[in-house]
Amino acid sequence: MRIPVGIVGFRGYSGQELVRILERHSGADPWLLEHRADSTERPRPRGYKGPPRAPATAESVAKGAIKLVFLATPPEVSMELAPQMLAAGAKVVDLSGAFRLRTVENYAHWYREPHTQAALLEEAAYGLPEFYRDKVKSARLVANPGCYPTAANLAIRPLVAAGLIDRTAGIICDAKSGTSGAGRKPSLKTSFCEVTENFSAYSLLGHRHVPEVLMHSGLEEAEFYFVAHLLPVDRGILETIYVRLQPGVDATQILAAYEKAYAGEPFLRLYEPGEAPDLRAVQRTNFCDIGFKVDAGTRRAVIVAAIDNLVKGAAGQAIQNMNLMLGWPETEGLL
Image 1 (cartoon, rainbow, N blue to C red):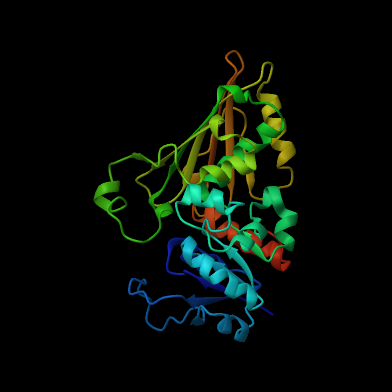
Image 2: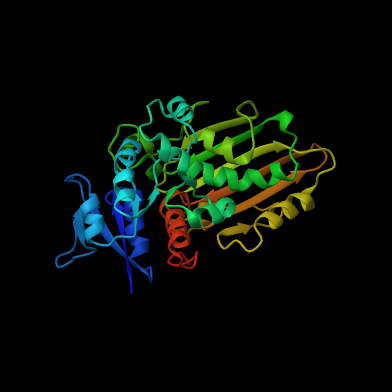
């Protein structure tokens, strides 16, 4: 029997991706939960019905016996709705940044807004399954990671944990994303004429995803440079990460660290040393692809990580978390 799961924010790019994936999931019955009237919904073919709809309220969740709710909403909306959904007996996977940081002070510093749910912020499990699978399984509230930190942490953490990086030299993460990462709300910056034939950097030394990388990679802020760029494509993230290695470290040790960290992981693909992934390899998939090259003579290494920002960086990872929380195979609906 299929289990009802709700989607709030189903009109956004991540929400639409949730619907697309859940419609092929063998165990989930998606429900569209209306949080607000919106005239920008895509036209539907004549006769199309799609998933059932209901208001995004605790009453709807209880009446529909909805077991889990995805919040593909802005942080302030997630803070408003998460307590209601939890009180109604549903588990919650939040795709915003509302519950990713551990303290209200850290949240206020990076998001420039107050946090209104301190207890839930402390309770939430960080939903990067490759690192926190057991915590996700037992959680009732999961903070889905940001797209940039997902790729960065998967690329950096195994090398930091193995002590292979000379952290005194600093780590540079040069990250590029397609425009869907900015959301569906219209803006001048993401309009066609501004993006096409263009390439731009933004949020220099102040991007709100930086603390997620620091918290889960073990780095200090002074050791980490992160710059985000807007690509003139619709989807995908590619991060080029520059590090200095400890004396004597070679490509064999780098590969061994990754293989040890990700043995048996269904959504991590490692490339042969010297090879690197591109966007086409991961678009519309839940994979994170990692490649690297080492120059042992100068102790330099370049790591390249690629994901689809709407799948492994958002909806796909959210469904990966849902599968763990509700007892389904982790790969269900994603492979």
